[in-house]
Image (cartoon, rainbow over all chains, first blue to last red):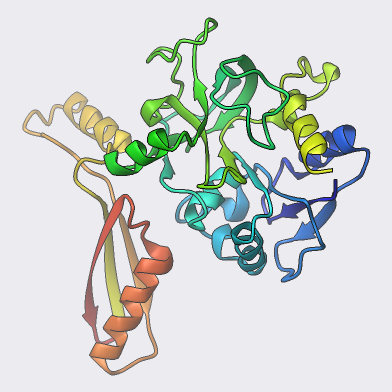
Length: 229
Length: 81
């Protein structure tokens, strides 16, 4: 599997993503600078976490209009899988590839800790190695991670099974107490209509190696490696 | 011309920052304070002397970048720069 990681000014999880991808695929991804208008032929494009453009105006708003994003949007529209993690999720919503918006956390605080997520689907390229309903532990590190969409959009997402991950407790129950940031419906990640674009606030790449304290995130990259080889 | 653009959260969209500001105002003794909503104010100078063309440009800027119209409304006033 050939992957490309887009690097924006202010990205800070691009190398973590590259390490996790290489561990899963045996192949180092191409690192593509935001000012480039071309992306090499890729089976997967990753928008990494970080603080692109210093989160000016709104998180992800500037990056969504950087030159490389025109090509990312074009590739996504023709079916290339695009994974947006944290700031990458914010960029995907600002670019219109995913609905809704990531707003300031309800607590107003930057939250940096592990959370539990329920895997809602395991029939996509991202989650084939997980069980449906499995509870996994991923870290979050964000201040603007409260997922908001209007009722009609939420109904559509729920009806079409497009919620990828939800914040939950240890037994997989989706509770208010398990919701770290005020996201509607405890949403931690969503898919586009075809299940090829995934945006999520938690960081699978940060728990993808035993040396990091956990490997729950590795299965996402192994799923991709198996599905997109 | 110069545009003075105000961006506000749509009614019904939660505004935890506005809530925190209201709480702080209450703590300072401003007991009459009710609901508080926080927004953004942006000034943009445009090299355009025709008001209707300037308005069209400003509206495109707001739609494409300055506001996220999923959660925000925008309003603006134009003046000669």
